[in-house]
Image 1 (cartoon, rainbow, N blue to C red):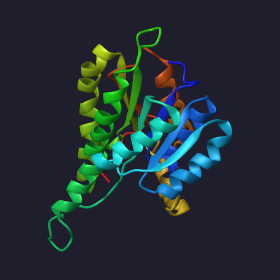
Image 2: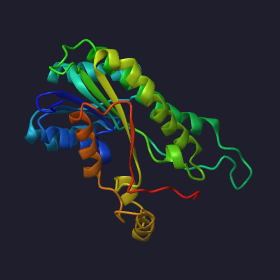
Image 3: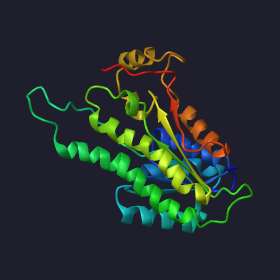
Image 4: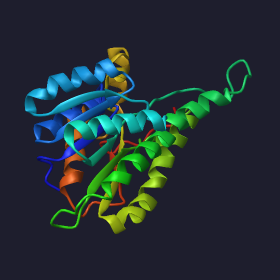
Length: 258
């Protein structure tokens, strides 16, 4: 699909991978709705990229159907129906199943990560795609593209990542059935599983820790750049043959147990 002129929705767009993806889509001529629980942050990113074309920042909680519907309505009114959905919003956690004091991990901590990362991704997809499948097909029969965000933790979950790995593993497992389900409508679904990237959260770590993490990556021996994630998102949109696939973007990294 040629990105230029189409409406796009980017969740988690206030910072990090989501913000850079919104920038790249706008640079390529898309009308971008930047969604995030941090409404002010989403609006700041939209204002920054507005020079490329139309951009809009919207506060949205992807775990709430009411919030998602309201955001989609706002985006549609400004940009028209979206053909592109980038599910990038997510949260992380690191907590052992049994703590040092012998206390088990609170169930609510596990549920929260699953609710945001897995259920939120599905919720956003089901509501955005419901309109996407009604659009007129393009010349090649395509109606839309959904890009989801998993993690290498889906395969190489480390100590204390039970909730995070399970949530991202669920997104990996969703990919093929979603692609098969939506093939009849000409909507493609692809998932990216990024490794270690230089996001705002990563940037808060001491420099020595960042360097140690980067050294564990075979090549290139550095943290991933958000621009590289955004480039892959746009490449997926533009390549019609990519469908039902999970792509590791990790420099051949395989995470150690801890």
